[in-house]
Amino acid sequence: MRRYLDTTRTHTYSLLFALPLLVLYELGAMMIGDGRGGGMRNGADVLLRTLLATGGVQGTLAFTAALAVGAAVIIALERRRKKVPLRGDYFAGMMGESVLYALVFGFIIAAATQVLLGGMVRFAADGGVASMPLFDGIVLSLGAGIYEELLFRVILTGGLFALLLAAGVKRPTAGVVAVIVSAIIFSWFHYIGPYAYKWELNSFVFRMLAGLAFSALYMTRGFGVAAWTHALYDVFLVIAGAAAAR
Image (cartoon, rainbow, N blue to C red; front, side, top):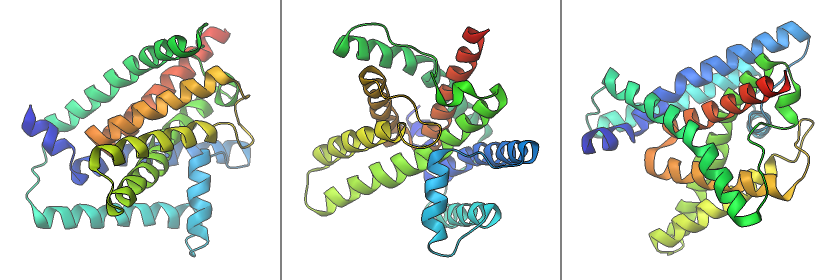
């Protein structure tokens, strides 16, 4: 078990495990765009594209290629430093973890929100993607998994953690601060943009706690498991919301 946990936290496993999620989202986004005459993408995806566009990386192909090349370089550098065996059963285990975490997180986070604020917490995704066709909601959920984890966990949580360590902050304190700050920003991000959720204190706290959970998962299990857990978590909420609306 220790070997499995250590091996699957490597960049090689995280990035290879996240690759199918990226492909599924991009294909789904293309289908939505072709079918309705316009693009529809996750907000974190749009933000990252805007930032990269300032550096001359424009268009879906160029953006996806930049991500793929970056991932390939990271994997190659890691595999030059140490031997990382590729095992199919390890990837299957990561998927099993992701499904389990996605199913459990909603109940744990909702219970924690009720303890803090009281009252009932809606599990379904109210507003935003819940008002879209089911396929659109699922596609955007996949995008949330890959791009929100990339933005809020890898870049924001990981970046803050590295900066705090460089500033001399002790490792445990740096980790806690990075997780909390990124969770607050993650929750706030859901209330901006054309498909923003309606502001409610309980939903803000719910999403902030979700951000804490995803950040903790990222710090302990790596990007790949965090991305798939987030994607499946959102997919389950979208499907539950669609079923409840019937």
